[in-house]
Amino acid sequence: MPLLSALHAVQDAHGFLPPEQLDQLACRYGLSPAELDGFVSFFSGFRTHPLSENSLRVCTGPSCRMAGLVDALSAPGAVPAPCLGRCDQAPVTLAANLATNLAEDDEAPVYPPGHWDWLGQFVVGAQRTRLLATLEASSLTGMGGAGFPMYRKMATVAAASAPTKYVIANADEGEPGTFKDRDLIRRHPDEILAGVVLACRLTGASRGYVYIRHDYPKAYQKLLKTVEQMEGDGLINGGAPSSLMPSITVVRGGGAYICGEESALIASLEGRRGEPSPGPPYPAEQGLFDAPTLVQNVETLLYLSRIARNGADWYRQGGVGRRHFSVSGAVQRPGVYEHPCDVTAATVLAAAGGLTPGDTLKAFIPGGASSGFLPPSALNTDLTNEALAPLDSVSGTGGIVFIPESACLIDLATGLMDFFADESCGQCDPCRLGTATLAHGLGGLKQGRVMPQSQMVETANAMATLSICGLGQWSPLVLTSLLRHFPDDITAHGQGVCPAGICSMGEGS
Ligand SMILES: Cc1cc2nc3c(=O)[nH]c(=O)nc-3n(C[C@H](O)[C@H](O)[C@H](O)COP(=O)(O)O)c2cc1C
Ligand code: SF4
Image (cartoon, rainbow, N blue to C red):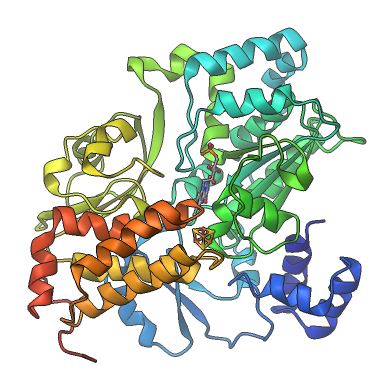
């Protein structure tokens, strides 16, 4: 059992991690107490002390921030939490005790007998080869943010001659403004897990993991129940694991945004602190326990299932594929919407019912917090990396946040940069110092204090070029997008005026 799962089991049972239980775990996993402490303390989801009854996590993500939730932080027992992945329900608070949350189980999904019979055809080698060709023809790219073609990673793992290979479904979703994975797992756990089974069959992997964000308890329960049903149907978790009947384990993360990054995720699954080690070698060559490992976002695996059943042409209807967008902020019907990959934000906004009455659009985040802010003039730009590149942005996770004139971009940017500074694993200086410097600079602007622009730009450039993983490379966009598209907001704050009247100018200056 991964160390993460053993820790969660103890915490579920006791509400926290009692010292004697930690001692036992250290013995069981061959770790010194200091090593175990180093692992536990890396994550925000583990507690070494009991929680008070009224402990409440208050989401500080952009949509909740706009909904005024940071005010709830003054309540007794309230603690700030990074974006809780429920932006469609903003403002969001969660009981801090995850065991309590786990008890709030949804109805279990029940699938009729034969529900997964269609998977049977992919036991035959020729059909698997055909599916690989279909996948290549579909041009399906990853939905976790990096947008890498799935076929290429799949082919690398499939071609590797190694005694053990792994598939990891990444559901660690933590990018502020993004909640599609939580929604998709709750609605389609059967297709996502079928995608994991298919990925094992296509790559020759005998073991699969679904790594799910620790504070998605209902989605976690859905996966567990669905795994049980697949076991009952004889599809997974038989005797000796094989690529045709793989073992599949659902693992909860410990509460660290960086563990969504694939090498950090693998480290945490191995029982090491979630510090990225970017390739080469990449996980497809040398991943979990040094074995070839296919890491895919859960939405990508959902589409693998659908492409296996419906073909490449179905996926590429209209010339491009499709994806799910998390839509939140000042919209009438926030939620998860499926659109062609080259949809514009204007179309996404219209499908979500348009802006909330009385609001005027100030800006939007096109693809999760690391994609920065764009002005309304970009509404008709395709949400693809190619089309967004001239605007210095990316399609990222497809988490779109519509921001009204009543919100303050400096305030939102400060919240996001604080988040990145908190979540930086700290192992490389440009990111550790850079996120802190930009958070400090933006926080100062909220109070009318100006950090020289050259210092901010130099810091952002150093982060983008010298950081070793995507957190440090992409997070400066939060600042640079403001400098490029919203210079007036920066100037106004520098002169002690918050146009939205949100920042408390002069406080602490
Ligand atoms: C800081 C950071 C956080 C990430 N978080 C996630 C995540 O929560 N879920 C995810 O699927 N990918 C995440 N990624 C991307 C993964 O490293 C990896 O590219 C992805 O899981 C591969 O799957 P895909 O090709 O299907 O997108 C993150 C990357 C970075 C740099
Ligand atoms: S860029 Fe940031 S999060 Fe990534 S390895 Fe460096 S310090 Fe860690």
